Length: 149
Image 1: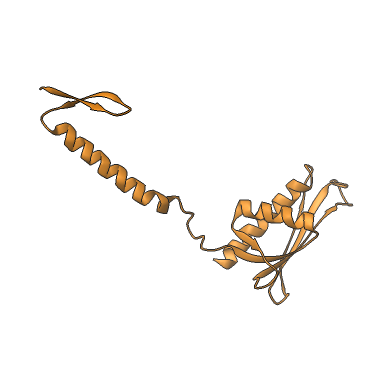
Image 2: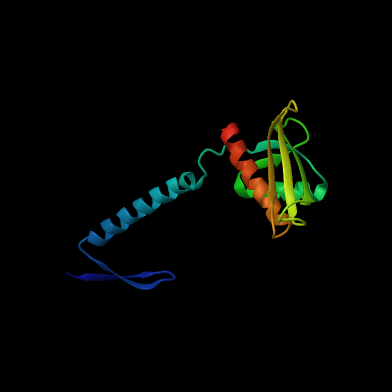
């Protein structure tokens, strides 16, 4: 088998078989790479996520921002003031009863757009308000994704 030496910019010298086999392999490789790049964006897209779930968050500004951030870790949500599907009434508090007395608690009541209560979530955390908020957001996201999709 003879080798033909070609110069390729930025790679230096490249040796390639002269019988054409290298050219076919190279073309096939380009075809596979092209197809992979064509279908990769579709495969990387999350399944079942079409648009964010519109929520009105009724909480103080700090809690509302934190809750939305934590909700978006577990799903796709948008905070809106009109055109919402659900209202989330949220607050952080300190538990005053039992073994976890004094620990932060996240309390959320989720209602539909007409104001009818759908469910309530309460989570205690010994690790701070951020963890309590994350636990509440995870539960809200799980339940709303089931209802919305």
